[in-house]
Amino acid sequence: MDTLSLPLRSWLNAPAHQAWLAAEGLRLLDFAKASRLSQGFGNPDARGRLPEGARAETMNTARMTHSFAMAHIQGLPGYAGLVDHGIAALMGPLRDAERGGWFAVAGQADGNSAKAAYLHAFVALAASSAVVAQRPGAEALLEEAIRIIDGHFWSEEEGAMLESFNRDWSELEAYRGANSNMHATEAFLALADVTRDPRWLNRALRIVERVIHQHAAANDYMVIEHFDCDWQPLRDYNRAFPADGFRPFGTTPGHGFEWARLLLHLEASRDLAGMPTPGWLALDAQRLFASNCRHGWDVDGALGIVYTLDWDNRPVVHQRLHWTHAEASAAASALLKRTGQEQYEVWYRRFWDFCEAHFIDRQQGSWHHELGRDNRPAAEIWGGKPDLYHAWQAVLIPRLALAPSMASALAQASVPGLV
View (tube, rainbow, N blue to C red):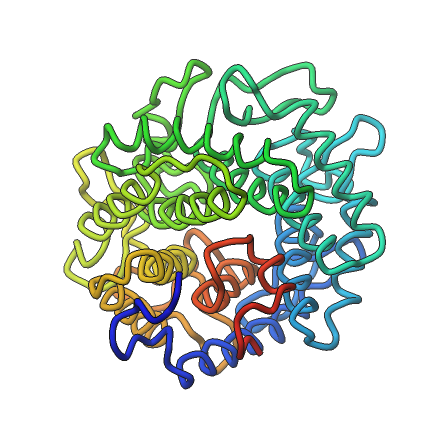
């Protein structure tokens, strides 16, 4: 969308704000370099050091590879080797060379041999970004990721991703998850750009139709996270473990914001490709944002977005997570670009002011990943600072068009002042 339609004096048009975002991105990237291990990338502690016994994990290796690829695409020196390291790890120790697919941890050091759709979506995203970055081995990684998604995870019948399998793919988990399908949607947008195959945009639309336009719309646009194999909501799922880092009980406002942004990316990508685009994509994005702001922000006596809510929209887990606020800010910027409405400028500034005041760590680097109810650093759900992906994307998205996907948009250098 033409930025002339933005509100007068929008931060998205302000050179100083653009420079601030760029500087914050460089700071985040520099901190994340320390995550390199021999078999991939690990989880730095709060000071940016790898603890003794740190292990390479597929999730962070894929996320780091994707993130470093976007740094390299921008022309930032020193990141090409990190992208290559990630590709080698994903094609090497993190991959199941015998049965195909990826383990959660190199060499199954965690005792887990399952194959999860969530992880494979990130591998596909990393591969697509590495292809755009023109790094050696990226095409082979992309082909393997697509082969596994097509051969095992994508269900044409359900129009969504299956959740997880045992190592030899003979047993399917009787569970369907919104989170894994959300990240599959993100990956499919990138795959559509690098392969120029419209099936990925059609698959993304089918996921969104089911998870958001059907289920979330019937739940006041609060995203239902957990389903059985017939896509019936599991409202009591993990009630006994409400603060689970990946499958928490109830609804997760941060995911509502993330979905809102992805709906706008999907709309813009289909428009760019000349494909039919449902009008409800933008409407659902606005309703997701409004509902999750209403129920998630400043609801327990302190500023910030709570991690989870119950089915009556009461806070369950009060911690504030950095990724939630990064996604809220990114969603506000996307809606601001899409609609030009002043309300999204107000929210965009509000979220960044909160992040600057509470999450951004100017002393030890990166962002605090978790705050307690008092908005002081905590580590009950997420210890250390292993995640570059969410905050890094949050400083990039406001400077990019809604389509194509991020790595492709960076490669096109369509927006001035990116570095």
